Length: 115
Image (cartoon, rainbow, N blue to C red):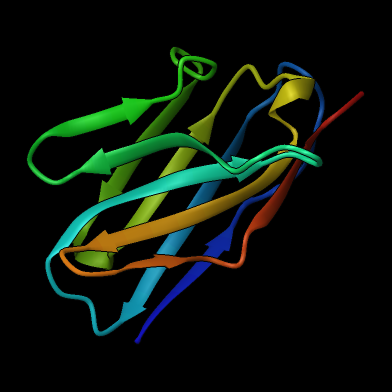
């Protein structure tokens, strides 16, 4: 069983910054990648960024240059640094961990960008 706990969401003004964290615990073997997805009201869940073992990172075009994903392997924790936030970044952000044979979701954390 794998458990993901996200933190760091909240309300921020346009142009501001937030840092999301996702800590994984449990029976974790052979992580392929960890990543962040988001879902805005009335929209489908979409990839924001993911970090892939030994390969690198992938970002959605809408966040390139503004968001940065990183990972602390010793802590099984992935971070999402979000800068220059825009109202259209408002969504519930979900962490996802993918292994060789399964994937797991966190419970989600709300990010609201509004003045």
